[in-house]
Structures are given as structure tokens and as C-alpha cells.
Amino acid sequence: MSLRYRIALTIFVLELTMMAVVLWQSLNLFLEESRLQLVTTDQVIVDVLGGFAHTALITEEYAGLQPYLERAGSDPHIHTVLLADEAGRIIAASDAERIGGQLGTVVGAAGRYWRRLPIRNAAGPLGTLAVEFSRDAFHDAYRQALRRGIVLAGAGMFAIALVGLAMGYLLTRRLGRLVVVAGRLGAGQRSVRAGLTGRDEVARLGRVFDTMVQRIEDSQTALERTNQALEARVQERTRELVKAVRDMESFSYSVSHDLRSPLRAIDGYCRVLAEDYGQHLDPTARDYLGRIRAASRRMGERIDDLLLLARLSREPMRREAVDLAVFAHEVLLQFPDSLGGPPPQTVVPETLPAYGDPRLLRVLLEQLLGNAWKYTRESAAPRVELGVILRGADRVCFVRDNGIGFDMVQAGTLFEPFRRLHGAPYPGTGIGLAIARRIIERHGGRIWAEGEPGRGATFCFVLPAAPSAIIDDAPVPPVA
Image (cartoon, rainbow, N blue to C red; front, side, top):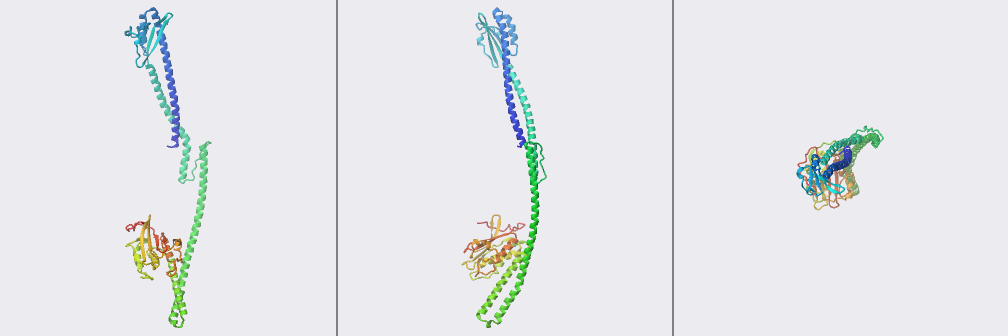
């Protein structure tokens, strides 16, 4: 219920209560006045008839009194008039049939009442005058007063309702204006104002509201200007950062590409020295040549990885529906059967649909599966698994092994370039997981690692969903 109707209802209830009290008091006062008036009228009638009865009792001329009693009995307010002698015998009556009866046996009927007047003289009692009055006059007065009260109450309630609504409207009209203005302000119209005038509290509230709106508008304007300036600065910094990143990628690519030729020359000359002049060199020199060739090959591998990492950031992506299970089988065939131990048992699902760049996702599996293959070499029963599980709303792909694992304290450094947790005897350049992270980031996904020393590692990644439900048919086990 609105405030306007609450005020109107409150005024209506208060005024109705006051009117009910006033009407009740007025009705009681009217009824009391009517009762006193009837009592006075009754007493006058009894006194007048008593005078006639007194004369008749002294003169014993009852026949002359009879017409007066009959005329009195014809009055609507008077039902019966009886005159009895000293012994109580009825000697005159408005109803002649009751003459001769006893006054003591007379009983009042419903809706009537008796008034008796003893008649005396100096010698003693002469008789009794009894008049039976009807209550109809009093009841008529009561009903008339009640009808008037109901009419007045109805008119008063209607008037009170109109007054309450009018006062509610007058009291809340300006508050309603504030509500409308506040609603428009909430809808984004910052130029609205209440514009209330006057000296009462509502007018002061309106002025305070307008001041607040003006301050909000000023603050919003200043904030928009600040945001525009910040946005311009962010765009400028973004352009500078993009240019710097591109320049760095171009520089890295150029440097890495330019270093390949000298390394190939070093490795080639060392090979020629070893083949053509090896018999003239002592064992120490031949060992040095072998070390130089091994170092140049490792450097070449690093340069190749750097070129791959730079190329992953530069080349455009081509997204389409792919099957990671097919890529996994192809990648696993490229790995040697043994790296110093039994070949790992591989577990790959029949199908693992995904959506992304086929070439990049293949490189992703090469890095993750190769990493798992490498670090299970010392396990008694090595095992490498590719799978998918559901974690909440995410469809999480994973590569799990039972190799040497890692401490979760070091999980934050796994994907940094050239950061290796395990050195010799495990080959590698330390950039494979950085390549994996770059591929996932270019797809807009997430990658993380879970592991425990001596109990293997699990590398999890989430790829964004396809624009259409291309992977809905693939069964996905829930999280255990």
C-alpha cells in the first residue's frame, strides 16, 4: 500500500473513531432526553387524570369520569386507565369491561409499563389511579434516532474518506514527485531535478535531493572524463606494448635464425676434424671435439625451440573440430621404444573431440606426451595416459604419468622458459612446457600441473567450447 493511501486510511480510522464516539454520545443523550420527556409527559397525564379522579372519588360521580377515561384510553401513548377505590375495586376504566375487577390482579404486558397515583384527602386515602402507557413512543424515538445516526454516519464516512484522500494527496504529492525523479535518475537521466518549493520538510528534502543529483552529475562527468583519459592512455600503452612484443619476437626470431648458420658451421668443422684428423689428435682433444659438437647440437635444439615459440606467437590460428586421440596416436609413434627402460604403457581414449588449431594442438600433445614419456624412464611399470574428466562446468583434458613427479611448491615455475626441475640425465631444453602454455593461452584456455614426488605428474588443460555442440556425443566420465 502506498504512503498516500496509508495516510488516508489513518485519517479515516482516526476521524471515524472520533465520529463514532460523538454519535454514540449524541445517541445516548438523545435517548436520555426522550426518556425524560416521556416521563414528564406521563407525569402530567397522570396528574391531570388524578385531578378528575379525586373529584369523582369525593362526589362518587363515576359516570361523569368515564368519558374522560375513555378519551384518554384512545391516546396512542395510553393503553389503559383504571380508577380503583380504597378497597382496590375498579370503579371506572377506559375499558368499561374491566369495571368491577381488582386492581391488584392487573399485570403489565410486554412493551408497556404502569404508573400508579394514590389519591388522598385530609381524612385519608380515597383510591388509586393506574395508567398503562405504551413503550412504542420511546421505541419510535429510538428507531428514528438510530436511522438519523446511520445516515449521519454514512455521510460522515464518505466525507471522511474524501478528506483523507485529499489530505493524503496533498501530503504525498511532492513526495511522489521525488519518487518519480529518483526513478528517472536511476534510469540514467542525470539532468532531472525535483524543483520543490516551500519551507516545510518536504521542500527541504527536495532541495537536498537536487543538490545530491547535481553532485552525482558532476562526479559522473568527471569520472567519464577520467575514464576517457585512462582509456586513451591504455590504448596508447597497449599499442606500444604490442609493438614492443612484436619487435622482441622479430628480434628473437632474427637472432635465433642468424645463430643457426654459425652453429652448423662449428658442428660441421668439428665433424671434419674428427673424421680427417682424428688419428693425429690425442684422446683429450678428441673428447674436446665431442663436447663441442654436443654443445652445438644442444644449442641448435634450443634455437629450434625458440624459433618454434616465436612462430607460435606470430602465425595466425585456424580453429576447427579435431580429435586429440588421433593426434596422440600419431605423436606416440614418433617416440623411441626405450629411453633406458621398458617402454611406457600408453592409455588413449578411442576419441577425444576438441576445437582449436590442429597444428598447434598437435604440438601441444608432442610437448606434454613427450614430457611424460621422458620422466617415466625409471619407473618399474611406466604408464602414460591421455583422458578427459568433468570438473564442474569444465571439460578438463589431462596427460598423466607415473614418473618421478615434482613438488607442488615448484608448480609455479614449471611453465617458465628454460626452467628445468630435473636436469641430467633427462634431456631437454626447458622450453617444452612454455610452448604448451603459449598454445593454450592462444586458444583462450587454462593449463596447470598437479604432482607429487615419486608418484607421477598430471598436466591438465581446458580449451574453450566450440561455437556449436560438436563434442556433445563424446562420453566424459565425471570427477571421482
